[in-house]
Structures are given as C-alpha cells and as structure tokens.
Image 1: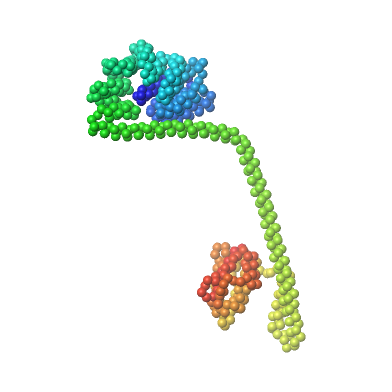
Image 2: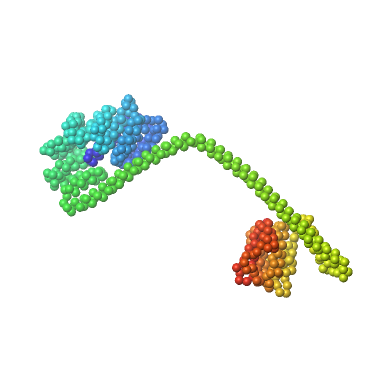
Length: 551
C-alpha cells in the first residue's frame, strides 16, 4: 500500500509540473520561487514560500494564484503524511475556484485528485472514489483523465472490487498505445489485479514485459514497481527468485532515493534472506524506519507551525489594524497627560521646596532671635551689673579684667541684633588661635593641615558653624577628657572638607548623650549639610570625624 500511495503521488506531481507551464494564467513572484524549491526536493522551503504566494494572491485579489498556492501546499501536506491537513487545505483552495470558469477546471481537477489521495490514505475509500469522479469531471486533458482513472482503479483494487478495477484499466489501456511508460504501467496493474482476483493466474509474463519496457525507457520508478510485484509473486512459490527481485528493488530504491520503497524492499529481504543477512537487514530497516518517521513528524510539525504562525500573524495584524487608530489617540492623550502631570508636579515641587526652605529659615531666625534675646536678657544684663559693681570700686576701675568683661558685654549685646558679620579672610589664623587657646602645661594641642587655601571656598555660614563646633569640642575636652594630647587634622577630598579630632583622654564609654552642647553641635552640622561621627570603639581616648561640603 505504501508503494501504491507514493506511485499515485508521483503521477500527480509529474502531471502538475507539466500542465502548470501550459495552464498558468497568473503572475506571482513567490510562486515561481516555491515551485523551484518543490521541484528540487526541498518541501519545507517550498511550503513556506507557497504560503507567501498565497498571501500575495489574497492581497492582490488573485483567486487563481491563491488557489494554486493552496493546492501545492495541500499536496505537500498529503505527501508528508498529514492527510487531515491536506484535506483541510484543499477544501480551502476550492473556495477560490469557480466551477463555471473553464480556466479554473485544471486546478479543480488537481485539487479533487489530492483530496482523493488524502482520503484514500485515511482508508475512506467510498469518499475517495467520489472525489476522483470530481477530478475526472473537471479534467480537460486525456492524460490527466487517465491518471485520475488509474487512481480510481487502485481504490477498487484496494477494496477487492477487481471487476471494476479491470474495467477502468481496460479503458486506460485502449488509449495508451503511443505512450510506452503508461502502457507498461497499465499492463502491470492489469496483471496484478488479475492475479489478486485469481491466485492461479500467472502475471509473470506481463510483469516481465513491463519490466523490459521500463528498462528500455530508463524508467527507474517503473522498474522499482515491477521488481516489487515480481518479488511479491515469488515469495511463496520461489523464495530464491523473490530474494533476487527484492535485492533489485532495494538497489533501485536507493538510486531514486525513495525511503518508502527501501523500507518495503528491506521488509522483503528480512523475510527471504539467510539468518545472518536477516539480522543485518533488520538493523538497517530499524534505523531507516526511525529516521523516516522522525523526518515525517518533523515535516508535519514544520508545516503545522508555518500555518499556525501565518494564521496567528494575520489575526494579530487584524487586531492591531482595528485598534491602531484608537491606540494612537490614546498614546497622544497619555503622553500629553504625563507631560502635564510632570510640568505641574515640577512647579508644585519647587513651590513646596521654597515654602519649606522659607519656613526653615524663619524657624531658624525665630530661634536665633529668642536665643539672642535670652543672651541679652541673661548674659548681657548680668555682665552689665558686674561691670557696674566693679566700676564703683576704685581699685578695679581700670583693671584689664573690667575691659575684657566690657568687650564680652558688647559682643553678647550684639547677638540680639543680627548684624552682618564681616568675612573671615584669615580664618585659618582664627581657628589656630581658638584651638591653641585650650593648650596648657598639661595638654598639648597639635594642628595639621589648617592652611589658608583650605578655607578659601568655604562659605561664611559654614565657617561660623565650624568655629562654634570646634569650640564646643574643645570645651568638652577641657571639662571632661583629661587628655594630655589633642590632635586636629584638616584635609580637603574633592568637594568635601574632613576634620579629624582625636585625644588620649578617658573617652566616652557609651553612645554620646544629647546634652545641650552635643545637641547644638548636631544642629549646626546639619545646617551646613555635614555629618559628625563619634568613634567610641577605640581602646583609649576619643575620635571624631566631621565632614561637610566646601560650598
């Protein structure tokens, strides 16, 4: 049955190739490329490009081009063993063909013939006969008609209606006298059918006559068929002779590269060969059968995938095309909305930032004012009372201490007036004097890196805050640390200034407690965007790092 199916397909393909050149009345660039792939034995590429040719035909409203592409795709599916896919695609092709248009009759005949082959392979023999009748109905060429009749006769042969088969073969034989290859084919089919009908009938003379014609015509496919029939006939009668013809069939099948016929020949060789050779042929058969099945499955899957991707792409394109205009407006509206939100958000953010900064500045100013008022009320007024008492004592009236107290009074009074401070051009000297003032006989103060360039780009606010922070640290040192050595290092790293304070005093046992001094220090360092870090893990003494931006 495998040989029968392949033979039908080859007859059909050869007929199509010949008739296409005569009957084609359309131009489709993809179709010509696909046909070359098909004729050169590259079914995967042929199927893919025929699919492109179909789409080209649909886009250009060329029904004949579309139908012909679909018919070729259906034939490739049927040949790959996807009989349901072949039926489905042929039915789709019929939608583009008009039975009333004579230009479409050739394609209708070819398409119904493929439907007949696919249905035959699905063992639906009754419908297969009907489909071959439809192919014959639309055939306007005697060669095509005889091919379709031959396929119909093979169905009758398969269902053992030998009389109907022989009647058809007789009709074909009467019209094939001028075609040697066709005559040999029909002669072989008649001889086989008579033998199947009557086991006592001897078909060998006709088989051999057909074989001689096929050798003369160099018809390798025909020779392959003759060797198969002769081997089948002699299997029970003369196994050695059957083995001879099976060898010949296998050799020809290798030449024409027919996997199906090689497998059939190997089956015969396995039955007829001696035990040693049987094992060899069985191994060859097993490998070839696996390879053939894998290739067939791959082809079926590949064709299915191509069809799926095409249909999915079409569906997706329709959806995209339908929603394209709406989405375009949605995107524009969305983009405009985002821009509007960003613009509004930026304005609101800037206003909020300005408001927060203004509130912070007002809060700081209010706090400073309250502090300065307290300084004025408590410190300045207290100093003034002390000055008054000292002035009333003649012995202390011109004392330097009184002058210093008076200067301190003036400074504390000025705090309440927020007078602009003059720039500290010699700030490094001021820091030097401040820090060195805490040195004593029991405490050394060492400064490193305190130079004029270090402070050139530092803002006056930062200078003022750093001066008070360092003063607070030194006051705490003098009160609590009991240190004999204090080292303060200044350095600039890129856009930051780092100040490292270290002493060898008693240190801080736990985390620093937020008393007034430390609280003020934290507030001051925050005001200039800096950080202060206390290292309490040192074995002895205290280490502090202060970092703040240059500007």
